[in-house]
Image 1 (cartoon, rainbow, N blue to C red):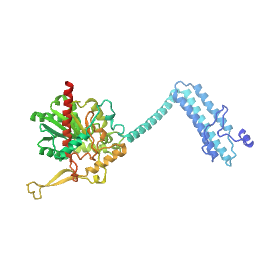
Image 2 (spheres, rainbow, N blue to C red):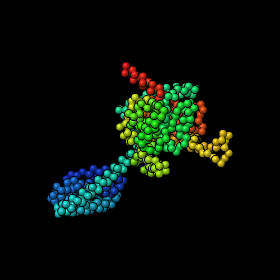
Image 3 (cartoon, one colour):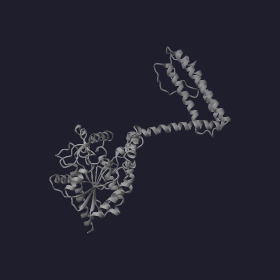
Image 4 (cartoon, helix red, strand yellow):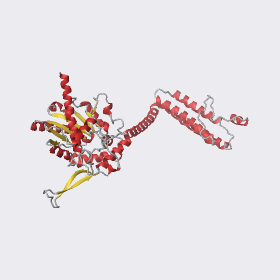
Length: 501
């Protein structure tokens, strides 16, 4: 009635009715063009607010509430309902009759809610333990729902971030020794080699350590070994199971070095590519007390010394491996098809590399050279074919030298590396050779070679059918790296002798 009198006197009706205790409706007018809907929303919002407040009071401390408090709270809710029924808002809008009916229905909803709440209060007075169990159970369901939602958010965040927080961690670790740039010196040595000036001594044995899947690439490092043999140098390719774990291969490399040393009485100079560099470094880190008199130095080429984003994204939860079953496919490929160990790939993840390098450091007196490159992504690179093996054709007539004809087996490794490099560039804004990010290929304390020439991860060990003759080939690059290791070793010995004096 009071609302009708205000309308006749030209006063505007309030947006939300007020009760006797001065409760002001603060809900904004959401539906300005439809007063009936706006009034219904306001009433429903108030009802929900009161009901939620009453329910949360019982959920927080159900054991300490007595029946009297519950009944009083229920009576307050009933009082609010009766006031709402009396103070019905009347609008001058043409749809005022509809507004009145809508508010009447909303008031009925309040009364029903109040009755239900009184029932809850009485149940509390009669048997508090039963009511407590119901409310706590509901509260636990809500908490479980929130936990599940938070888990989904964290999983999405891990998927988006990927390896972004891990790439380049070696450079950010204050405990790791700094590196030294040796790019200019390397370029000078490489230029001398291309002009016929070779400085590698024949007083050492050169051991080439291949990387992952090398057992299934017959021509892995073959061109480099052939070139070294032409120079009169003793060179071996380590016959290890490249798909085995890092620690297992480290033990095999240690035995290989000791066998070579005791057979030739010459120190060994190692060059490891990809995982082979990680395996070789692990052997020298773990067994240095046994090998320090038998090893002259180490060169690691395109090795994921700090870890690989490709391996990490395949094996980390919430990443690509979870959605397209890449992890399962890799497990079948490594464990079932090529009889390897899945740990070979796990050892190249950032998590495993961090754990290993915290326990095993390269000896400071050991001369080490790190080499890394960036893969090209031009259309010419996409058409590059790598010579990974050859097939003999015994049915054809033999060649003039009596050897059977051979058919090269090629693969578009350049295109694969370019695609992976582009993926890492787009997702992480990091330069890579297609497998290893450049910032993860630098061993702490080493002399680092950072050439500007675009070379992918497979170029170092597999010759290409369209190599540029005006550029150095992989064998010459390996020779230059080992020559740089020799010079770094000589420099270290001079510095140590000066300190002793």
